[in-house]
Image (cartoon, rainbow, N blue to C red; front, side, top):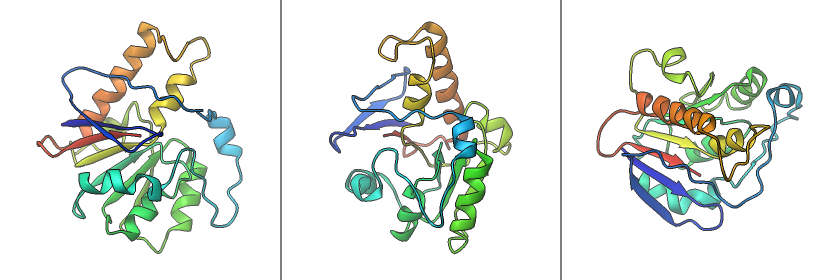
Length: 192
């Protein structure tokens, strides 16, 4: 599996064989929001919101890493239009996962015209057990700010010097990603 980190400030790609857990923090303002905020936020009509950047920004960096046949999992998808925008460019096999039922319901209702995209409520720390009991089923896992959000959301933590408990939670997350990725040389875990 290749671990790929794409920076907010440039679209350079940093490949890393995934033998050790590497936590890459990027120097950008992270918008933190809790589950209670996400459950109460009102999504108006077809409005989506990009916490970071959208497909147009990442397209040149991501396209060479993907195939139209790639089975892609988006973790912590929120109300981003990344997946539907990728679909319009031919990446039709996508699953979007978020822990917010209201966000998943709203997004699935907004994109009924894209039936190959699935929208699933799930916990990133239990995704293999809760959602994909049949074993690995994705070629690519995309995390667009999800790890950064929960790393900086620890109330008693400095995101630049995480505690061992925080690092252990990051290891659990990466372990869950590895469980849902099909193990072949072209499988990728992409963090943006």
